[in-house]
Amino acid sequence: MAKDNFREKIPQQPSKERIKNFSEVALGFREEQAGKEAARCLQCKNPACVKGCPVGIDIPAFIKLIKEGKRKEALEKIKEKNNLPAVCGRVCPQEDQCEAVCVLNKKKIPINIGALERYAADYELNQLSVISYQLSDKIQKLKTENQQLKKVAVVGSGPAGLTCAADLAKMGYQVVLFESLHIPGGVLVYGIPEFRLPKKIVQNEVEYIKSLGVDIKTDVLIGNTYAIEELFAEGYKAIFVAVGAGLPQFLGIPGENLDRVYSANEFLTRVNLMKAYKFPEYATPVNISKQVAVIGGGNVALDCARVALRLGREVTLVYRRTEKEMPGRIEERENAKAEGVFFKFLTQPVKILEDEKGFVKGLECIKMELGEPDESGRRRPIPVANSNFILDVDTVIVAIGQSPNPLLARVTANLKANKDGAIAVDKNFMTSIPGVFAGGDIITGADTVISAMGAGKKAALAITTHTYAV
Ligand code: FAD
Ligand code: SF4
Image (cartoon, rainbow, N blue to C red; front, side, top):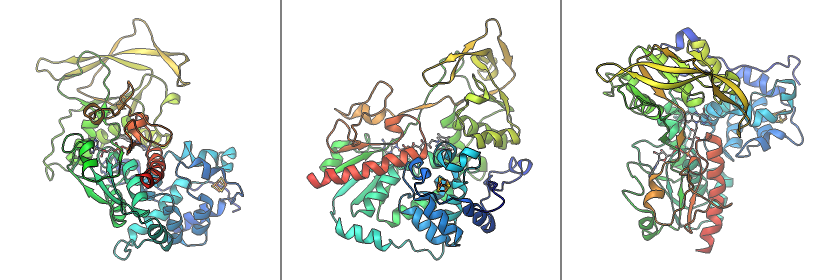
């Protein structure tokens, strides 16, 4: 192990600079840093980190390759299991997954696995002009052995759909991926902002998946443009539904229909997908005023707050518990603080106030205190009587969660969903309709990129078993 056994930190754009632009905040390891960090890995015989990774990357093996200066080989090792490494290296909550169980985490200095994964993946970015995305011999062999030439439809091009499509294509299936938006990527393109996940990174990963043979058809809303039954009639032997959780939740308080009240989804889609931050080059308006309140405490709320800040607004993030209970990633919380987002904890909005023209003119809130833990294990927030006060804001962004997209289950006879709208599946990711599988946020509700990818991977295997039989 290296003598200086400290965890290498990923360099960042300085906070004062970065709030003036939408460029990536984290800059990635330099070669020397990556080598040092890789040298700290103990190469455990029974590595806990691999079990902590939902797609089972051979973490010690790729780290060893980085240590040996074999960056390309490290990337190939990762791609044996993970089709979106440059995405995962940037947005996975590693602190709750592989890094949480790394043995060095007992000393609070886990290997910076995310930054090393990103370092390996970015090799490809710098080599775009020469890399031709040839299939490795191993995959080619698998493809020949399993050549089934059966058609599978994948619905939704977020991390779950892309992963399932890529794995099936690697196994020799003809895969057509249908996406309702005009660009593939799901939340990776419409939700997560450019400064955390540049869109050219997502595009690059999508190109890799296309190079495996996946045919991506955009602007197709399954359930509307084509019904599930029509896909079967077209000859698809199985369908994987990965339509995500894009239905915004609201608080149900007076004033939520006023002008300048946004759902997080609408606000982020305008800015990220429709490029409102490049107005007037892109003709997308985003009508927010000077003082913005963002309601919520997760990654989505933090993203909204940091986007509004970069659009030159003053931002207050309103959360009903304390920082300790916030579900948003620690790194992103720290970034938001450093950039100047003001946090108002133990605060619950009760009413959005209206001016004479129907615009927001303030947010009435009540103070909260923490009681006993609820079913999530976090202490329950309880209102403090007579503690109402007005927050002086003129725009409100509601970022308190998303529910599964309801359209497909609503229009597809016999496709069962539970009361929250999540499509019900068995242990093999099969829905109530034989041959229709589902995975990602549409079965779990809003979750993480890597858990959606894990579901896509498992479903791809289950689909293989199913299509042998049909
Ligand atoms: P999605 O990514 O939602 O993709 C579903 C796709 O299906 C969409 O492209 C949609 O347009 C398409 N679709 C929907 N209906 C149809 C239809 N009928 N026909 C055709 N296409 C359809 N997770 C992390 O791990 N780290 C983070 O830092 C993080 N930050 C986040 C920030 C934001 C703002 C948001 C919203 C989420 C964040 N998440 C994060 C969560 C993560 O992005 C999701 O858990 C993940 O994207 C779910 O993947 P999915 O493939 O199930 O669905
Ligand atoms: Fe290396 Fe940590 Fe994995 Fe052990 S658990 S192999 S130290 S990354």
